[in-house]
Length: 296
Image (cartoon, rainbow, N blue to C red):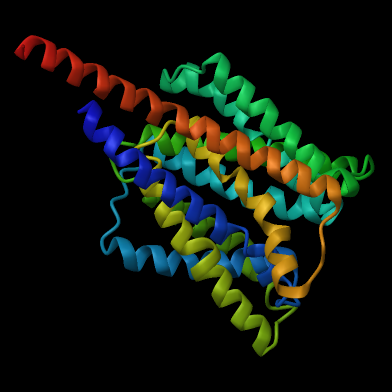
């Protein structure tokens, strides 16, 4: 069983990396849509709901506490993040939302019995430190209400991760479907007073399918084979990749501190993810040596 799980782990990490890349497209795609922020959130969630429903075929709604909890916390994450972007800088919103690994490290021990090691805490704070460097030029102490919304979005993101992990032996994707349906019901009414043009609808379609629907299908697969902390910390690559994509598409060059902070985040996550694989190889080597010794 342990070996099988270790075999699923690399695939799950790849799913999360792809998820982070697709999530990071949001910054570019949202620029295509000239509409109310809540309308964008609601419409892309409506489109994502259709994609996820088509993928599931026949969703299994068991209405468990974990399924409902994940759906509500997903909605809270999305809505609060949109609100925070309206009331504070984008850098503040992203950085404060991605304090979520701290809450997951605490909640994971309590609710999931997943032990947080000293090495994990080191990775968390080094990653947050890297993100502070990354966004240093854009951070702002104003926008108190927006900063509070961003912090609450981070707490909701942490709860979403924990509730999803609670469903590791079932089908957690239904929670994402329910969360998107609820977000759509909240956001779509704002669309009718501010309808986008053709370019906007193309952007919304891409947001719903590529930036939300597909990555959450991959995320739901990954959460079954990785700890809650891994499923929240690896996607921290998303805010680092976002300005890289902006640079590649419109030539906007990040500052020096952004390069330093991004490098810190990439190195820390790469090393942190590699440790279990290194330990696994050592165990296999030790087992092989023991078997050879017994045979001789």
